[in-house]
Length: 110
Image 1 (tube, helix red, strand yellow):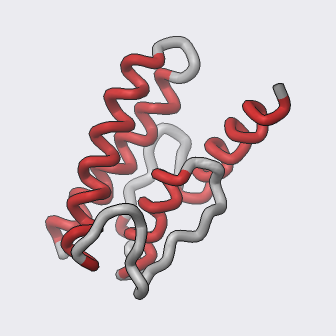
Image 2 (cartoon, helix red, strand yellow; image 1 turned 30 degrees about the vertical axis):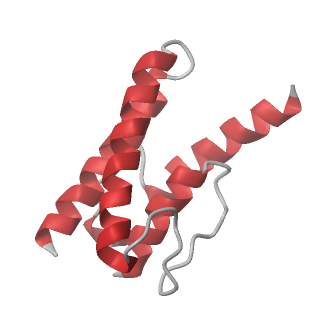
């Protein structure tokens, strides 16, 4: 469980990095997105044997407009690890999700 919490915090850190690089440096934002995705896939395989958010015990709820972040939240919720995720850079789990939701809404408005 300790290793899982470290990985979840690493994933969260990668999402925070994405916010710092958007929209001015897509290359760096993509680098952190791919890092987050690979760690998410590792935990998904540990949990249910497949990737993509198909865990029956912790289904992905499409809420943020960013499926990768929603998959991360499903991993956090699987063992109720919300209190173990370290807040950093003004973000916690909820307001980072709101950030991605607003970003998605802005994209749709153009």
